[in-house]
Image (cartoon, rainbow, N blue to C red; front, side, top):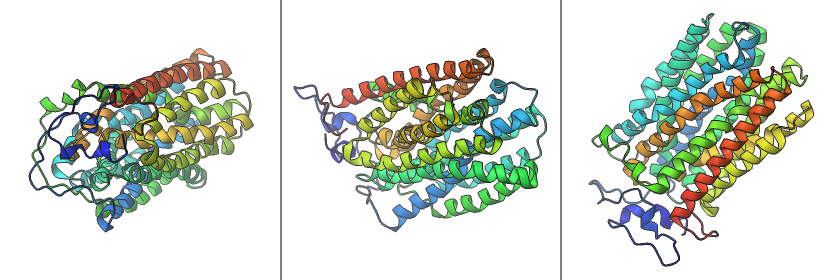
Length: 443
């Protein structure tokens, strides 16, 4: 299957039979084949001002929204020694878990609304809620306050920003879909690299409250740019009914991909939450421990950008490889880590391979979808993923506690996370074989 065939499915209105060798023809990549809707705009232009300005706007939004979400490891370590010192690591991590759960689960709602009403209908209120959440977090002192502001409100605002910005490029790009999405998602890696450094400096110099308020004003400016830049190509249409929202799960290849991504997410975010804590446990100073998360996110930035090569080698091929390597690194490198230099070497490599997975979820789902269904199906995938991201950090936090807060606890977390990521890689590879059984095919 060529990289252009598998995304030209909207031009067909029948499902082609499988070929004799077990490989599916391009039409079977679609979850459902239906006649084109009215207002046919033709294939995506794969370029032009509106297309690339959408990518730029998405990059800015991703830098702020997912960048700050990726920086939760800094908050995890800070709360453990300041406002929430009398709470366990597992309990504190629930704040970040709830934040991620709402971010991803919100795709069930924001994805279908994006398909119907476009990006700005979500980005404008999402920006207001997101900035309000940061400002309210700056005033928090008690656990329930952090949960309400940084967990729930931040998650709702994030869901309204994240899903339209990762779905919009697929309306504008076809052959360069993975490249465009990887540029957008690379913003989150860059944000995850710079935000921890900035927050750590600001917390030390001007205090927690004003550090968060400064972050809030910067977020408002960059999200304003995103609101102005992100464009929707397809015309408005009636929102998909909730009854039909789960219909893609009838397709085996979509279900396998969604479950595989969910299993991978169950484990792959563990270092993003606990690398700072692990560095401190190994004897790193407070500054170096904070920087370890930035190093991890720097590697992730490169991986998310590198994911653009998937347009040439196949998006499902590439995401399978990324998940497999992530599992290997957790099992073979995280578990035996016993020094700060080893952790600092592990961090950028792990971030790189995990970044490939993060970038390729939207384009992998998009190549199984009709253009006007991309938002809903990407949202459904993230909605399934949400339940795993909700429980992953607390499970790993509990494993740390079971190990007495020492090295053994981090080994337990590495074993669990590596195993579930590997299981996810198997599911994704099976989905790829459902589409084309030829191992060397570009899928």
